[in-house]
Image 1 (tube, rainbow, N blue to C red):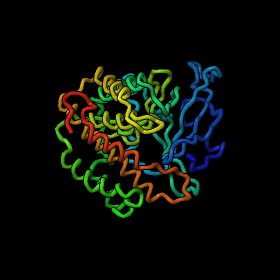
Image 2 (cartoon, rainbow, N blue to C red):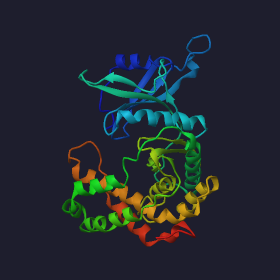
Image 3 (cartoon, one colour):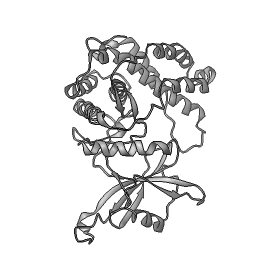
Image 4 (cartoon, rainbow, N blue to C red):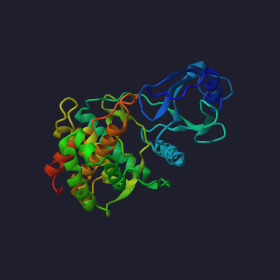
Length: 342
């Protein structure tokens, strides 16, 4: 379930009419996603030079209504970043501006009392893969590096809302008893590794814009080529190598049994290094950065596991696979190549 707010046919048609994308043909709710309402929109396409609609130019878009967990003050950052990256050739969907040039619009909610933000985004072809190949991992590493280079002159800035301070807050909110109820070893792991990771966290590595959530379901592929990187709603300014560590955490494990895949790891890092060579200090820090990535997703999943009602429409994600990956990264720093340290 990912359509929390119903928009009637007339309201939807009137909304799409505010954009220069032609007349609404269809709007289908999208099941994926847990925080926003999403629709796949099809229109007759932008008018031609004479102002007439061209049926052969039918176009698709993604319409998003922001429901939860999005600070409206961050929307200009997210949506402008898409435009910036797309203009530089990254496989990122452009924001479709309305007739007045606005990045997003405010529309009345179901009770007409509270307005909600909506944005129209370019539709990109491709599919998300659940079991990526080494060639796909190489491609995503290269595209991530291109993203980092393309964003170097992006003028926006946003702090990482899921940084170390948030890991500590989530751990305190959960509490050791609730963590132990998930698994007896989980509370011990958090108590031992969270302060150790926080104390050793580097602050002198190159910084820039990062995606911060580049899991396979946020990447579209056709064959081995990356056709889309989507869902930038955790994007922020942080350590660039940390973004590679998050992507490593997300891509380099067997989809069936959760074991480490060295072939995916080597391919991902080689793809990245071929476009933006890692500095020696960045490579040395990767083992700790990867442990931090595992801690970040372990804590957010543990919090959701504890606090999501049993009858909620959202499917909870198990934090324990992230705990196992954290332990693996701690014990196997050499997987990141020469120069990496525990």
